[in-house]
Length: 399
Length: 223
Image (tube, rainbow over the protein chains, first blue to last red):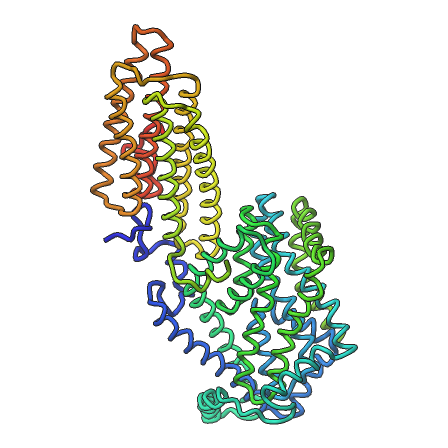
């Protein structure tokens, strides 16, 4: 019997050109797999992701103390750390991946919480590039592009303003890391101690097997450590990619239903909560914010509706670093994950409640979109300068 | 509202299909009311508000469905793009049926009353046939039976040709203009409604690329 919702006699089993194009990055779970069954590959992928974080941590530990110091002395300057966070996230197009790597580095002891915090903030800025790039897809349709570019860059401006306010505040007071440390201490113990994470136990075995394998093929010390780090990062990136793809398919109908229910009725805290839920579900703020761009381009939702969803995505994406910290043996790793959450929640608490302040990122985004729609080079130049040139120059100056 | 994320239920194109069927039901309601006003001599003012309110709901439903289709593509990517484009055509056709039903009401509001026409029984039968076709089109949107769709299109073509014949009769009629012109206009609206219903069913069952065209490449019926 035909699927009642199919139009034009099409069905899901028929291979379409788009489906053929998607084969190279097809999710592990087929689209028609039952929800329960689909959870199995996702849980497996989360486990693999945690193994990747463990491998990264193990690889750094294998390296000598001198090598560790040489590797990370460049980011001891907070601004250098910030710009490295931006560049690293732009490179992998995922703050979930970059923050997980940062958590792994902190877990290894090579990177301190103080140095990690600006990197985490940089990751928050770097992740906004994805939906801005998506908005460039409509650059030829002036009005669509204007709406799409404003909807995308409101995320940029909010996160830039958040860093401008909270990074100096953190450097002066250490309030965010201090609060995170208190929470972390209550949950898993004080800094410097060894946290007996139950998940760490499950992850330890495969990390050991891989380390033994590399040792058996003759790798040792720094080379062994480097290969383990590279393998760990590759596993983290691949696992997150597949988690996102599977989860996106798994919750697509729910996302669609809730977007239709919420966005048509306005924005506010409900939309923000939806942003949190969608992002936690798909493990990617870029997916959430990028879904919004075509909606803005088509005029289905306004920038005012999209803005809170974007802020919710900022909070939702912090779950990945917290998840990564479960595979770590140091409480400091969890502290960094909590800093990421506190940073985004604090930014909302400062910039969102008062209407005049809330409107600032919207006005800036609309202003930039107004210019970019008539001079398209400005849009491209903005992306290149903010996400590549300034961070590169910043790293060169401050490292 | 946000809890809808956690609720079980239809999503995606299932919801869109259900909304489309509701839109067609609204169009039928509007058609029945306006045609009855013309054919039964009922008080036009009694139904006018209902028809206009229904038309506004149909228009709003079209806009909402467009938004839902954009959301669908944004969330699901291009997997269902053929169907999404099909739905954009389909909802436009249903919206036109709503408009044409409102146009029939305009005739009644202009004072046209066919309740005393010599062929009133035939006219009422025609109205009944078209109204039932709307119901059947809604069923076909849910069912997607190629066989039933082919039979539906054949009967729609037959009815459309019959209505064309009646329009032609009016054009050559010896009766005064004030009698013939309203009938010709009514038949024209009915013909376009029938053509649109045929297209609705075609959109539901035929590949997107060939919709609106016959196999020999000629353009389709006037809808």
